[in-house]
Length: 560
Ligand code: FAD
Image (cartoon, rainbow, N blue to C red):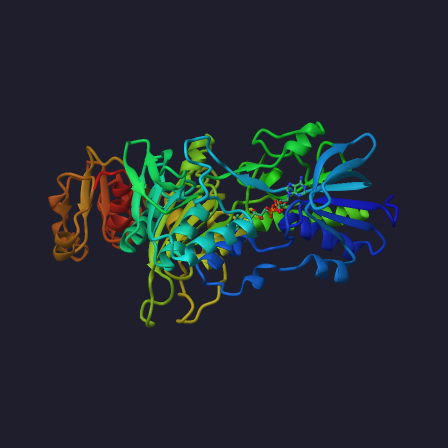
């Protein structure tokens, strides 16, 4: 039973920590709540920092969502900035704290302790990494430094290393500020969690905005001048990129030192192990946010997911539990994430095919390219949507989307359905909003689910966009001018019979041969495959996403 006046100490005052503190107060008016933050600011908008540097957010104060003074006044939270928790004594239930302002240490007792220390940007031990014009971006101070350099006009060329979410946001924002930007990434694609063909439109965007792209080429060292100022980045291949500003976006490392020194269990993914109430191996200590592990929905394994949504939600739950000893459990996390890169947006939830393969999980996929709203209504733009599912039961395992508009809506719809254990059939039956400016009577979510259902029901089998087509009879049912404009990549001896001529010319095809049908995006190929299947062709498959997605898949493999 919780004493009403017990003491809740929270380590880390931003996403998870501030959520825990305010929820704890709302649930327990009498608790003593202490929020420790080692830096200057609490409750700031980490996710807004790139947009402040890029001057899309012009007013710096807008980044400070809740100040220490506000949290004290409204929630009676004892906010101690520049106070760093340096040691936990679990037996005595105390935290040793370093007060940076007073330069002294002191002890604070707790009844419940919530750890939300976040993660730190990875910094590789290479030459030049400590130069003053080499940056990482995690907090307000980092963004102040980067913005000051951009504002000074002393930087005209930037090199961003790492093409993850933050790296791409920074590329966009630095380009927006007029810098010539280069982007280097060790992996052979941008946004490594995605399947390669789903991020090829992002590669095209980057190139279209004059970003110099180096994929499959990691950083070797940072070149410096005689004053120790960075002058550029040398890559593993020997290529050098000149830069006045270097931004490292190499990922993050969870801040688990406090927890591991207190002998709290660390999970297999390197985060602090937690249960569904976000309690650690010590039930009086909670861990939330980037430093903690959550249950990952598609695998049911516990792992780290360094995103703001889970950090806020887990903080809220831990705050309530710490304040009342009861509360809801943390729902499985799906890693739902989104980023805008110039005119394109790309998002995902759950498993990609690549992640499923790495985890040894049987998964298949369907991809469609459809208009974001009714094609006849002005302004429709193409949206590519890929659905990943379990072939044994149609359970939805993940989705990825890329396009100009409407990407967020589709991924959020699918993520919501996944939270309730949806199958592809459930998606096919969803009752979604429709009027021409907003969507289509058959939304892209329906279309991709229809393709998946047809595949599972053997009405129409799909093959992935990157499939090896050697030995197949490849039929392209686009019109001849379309074929001449854009050849299907990665296939030889392609037979071109436009869909509307297929019934007349069907004798030109070998019904016994394994046949793959393609078109622009997959719809005409589906119709063609149905004609063939009902005319004695038993081994027909449709190329998922047609030439559009195939060619991006081949380009991503460097085969186009
Ligand atoms: P944080 O919010 O980082 O807070 C941890 C705090 O703990 C820090 O302020 C740190 O100084 C403090 N601390 C650490 N150790 C101690 C200690 N010993 N004593 C006292 N204080 C301590 N996620 C998204 O979902 N969408 C986005 O668009 C997005 N954009 C991002 C953009 C940027 C530039 C960054 C950096 C992150 C972004 N994220 C985004 C990730 C998101 O911000 C994090 O997942 C989230 O902030 C994690 O919350 P947290 O509470 O675990 O850590």
